[in-house]
Image (tube, rainbow, N blue to C red):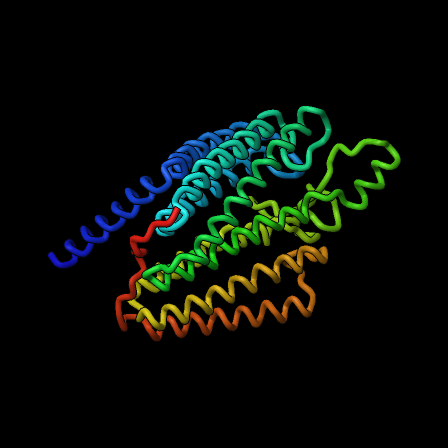
Length: 334
């Protein structure tokens, strides 16, 4: 009976959290549901359309963006729910981010349906305009994330653990999304071709040191032979979920709150270090699976730190019940 009571209590708290998220961010919650449908549709496309674009099945990219957008919209809705200042501004963020996400995913799906690339595509006036609209959407997403990050830095959360997750997680989102600035400029080879042909059908690249489309990791498509900025981009924009899951693990295993706060700070430092290392590795044109001695050494340090964090967490299991479910103070500022 006690176990059943605890399960029912957990379900009630989850339902309250979801209901609160919908009240605070209705647009983002709707987008989360839309992305579930989108993932179903792009999965069907992947199964039935075997077209390959730059070395990857055409519908892999839309599928990845649908999953990523759904996860991000749900996570951001929770952050907005718990950050009870700048209410009017965060309402704008809710609708602006939701609209931008739907637009981005719709255009990526459209280009997959047309069997062409979405990013960096200047091959026709239509493709150029598609990427221009996508760039505007990306700018809206980034500026919205900056505003939310600023709000998390100013707000005093009643749960210090949640405050760390929200602040560092959103900062990583801003940095991760910002890596797109390294992808947009044309590469030297693209400039050289344009000087001869007076055309630049592709301007920009995810890959450093080679054109996009070479051998890549299964499903993800990240380059196995050259640097790839998408790796750091992915790690950064999903830092919020990574740290949130770590904090949730501390909650489930009943780690003492004070110890959990120290451990989440260490986890945030390790995760941030991994992001910057992956970005450094990509920008120097080095493939993920073939790091040089320096990068190997830093990877080793981060790995040892992660092991130490795991050991410390296991030694703290069962010592107390920290407050993980965010319950921020009822303070509103417009």
